[in-house]
Amino acid sequence: MQPEARKTALAFHAKDDVPEVRREVFTYLSKQNFRFFAAVRNKSAVADYAVQRRERDGNYRYQPNELYDYMVRSLFKGLLHKDDAYIVYFSKRGAQNRTAALRTALEIARERFARRWGIHSNAVLSVVAQTPPQNGGLQAVDYFLWSLQRFYERREDRYLEFLWPQFSLVQDLDDKREHPYGCYYTQKKPLTEAALNDSLPGI
Image (cartoon, rainbow, N blue to C red; front, side, top):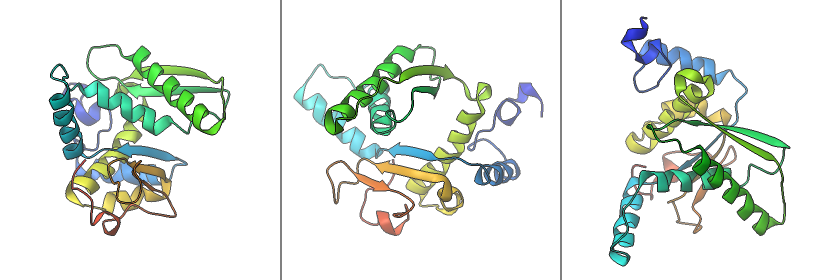
């Protein structure tokens, strides 16, 4: 592999890797001691929200960072109170430096958790923005997220099933059939096609 060819020569990326490479990466990941957490949104629901918000406020313009920060708050809301310090690595998106905004999103998540449950934390929060070639963890996350995307968009479950033992939680924030905050899938309640038979397609 030549670096000038990019893709796998620089970093593993599930969408771009050839099947032979992808198989080896999935096999490797399945043998590691990971605990994976994810939050997902339905693309149609996000679009509906943006339209409704625009109808109420003519000045409103949807920004992808708005959704990204919301997902960060949702994902980390119950994960920042158990240790003395946390280093959170984000995948750098575009040229804009959003480290401060992402740290704010984490702090908001921690504050809301403290208000609701009375559990306070003074843990140091460090935010590092990197690209996947700089961080193997981001490459691993890409594979886990790709397996989720294939499942939601194509109902292709073989990749998700292969990695599912390492999934701790998937928050489907738009599946509100039972609860207004969405549906949580865990090892005791696996994310399967049968579990989504009434939910909207796609994320």
